[in-house]
Amino acid sequence: MLFCVTLHGNAQTTYNHRVFWGRAVLADRITDKLKWEVYLQKRTQNIPGEKSPFGGPHFFSAWTWLNYSFSKSLKLSVSPLGYFDSNIFFTSPQDADLPGVKEFRWTVRLEQEQKFKWLNYSNRYSVEYRTRDLSNKGIYQPNWRIRYQAKLEKPVLNLLSKTKPVSFILGDEVFIQFGKAVKANANIFDQNRIYAGVSYEVIKNIKTTVSYLNIRQQRINGKDFDNAHVLWVVVAFDNLFSQFKHS
Image 1 (cartoon, rainbow, N blue to C red):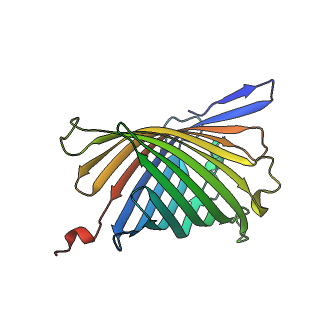
Image 2: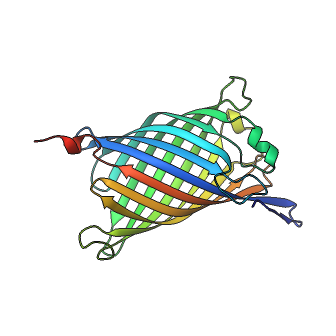
Image 3: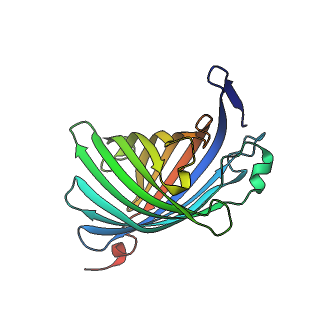
């Protein structure tokens, strides 16, 4: 169920949502250092007044990536193109009838991972150039978004297997935005995502990650917020084609 909490001192309204994210990751190596990936993602959300997180559309994306590993700890990723179709977080049942916003996105991302004795720690820096049809009239407006993510990962053996660890994950990612499409908005801060989850390679080259994600997103008036409780399920297929090749 969606409900609103109003903080009268700051005249702030927070809209709460239940959301589901499902993502399939298809990946394979090109060389020992170069790899391609495709993210296919579908997100749904509850209709206000209903509890199910599958009630209405929220997001669809097809996102392509090329990843180059300079070393085991440093990776550069470039997205030559991503396509997105997104709906606003609903605040009334009528919002479910609104059309989605089409978007094209180009991204550069740098990720550094450090492996310690007890856990792994990574930093991820992303710069996105987005162009969106915000008016649904075929007029695309550009803007930039910068993202920073910090993640802790703790692999634990002997829970489900002696050779394949179960990984416990805790992370946080913050987004800020600027540029033509958002220059009239009262907010530069876009959103914050904090998440906790568990990951396991269920069979060779197929890994499943299940997480709880909390999104705190500022509305364009700079005053009100959306607070989303997300069940996030990722299934990653690695070495998609190369695993079937015989040496």
